[in-house]
Length: 102
Image (cartoon, rainbow, N blue to C red; front, side, top):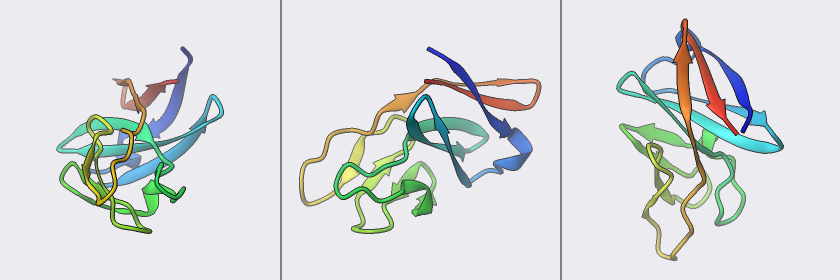
């Protein structure tokens, strides 16, 4: 696995999202209560970019059809159809810099 720089912790304040392309994958990074989490950024229902959705606590709502995802682990919280979990990625913080492993 490769360790990829996402940005500075100050660039991703609490309750905010960002995204990066790393290792050929689109990855969303969220700050929930001062902890950073990373999941796949493409909704597996219809392909929406999840970083354009709304984050409320650890619940991310897809901008297109309202699927609700847990950004701490990629699990689906709500949707009328059964969807697979989003891939989750390890996040680390070193000297104020956020890294993901892809």
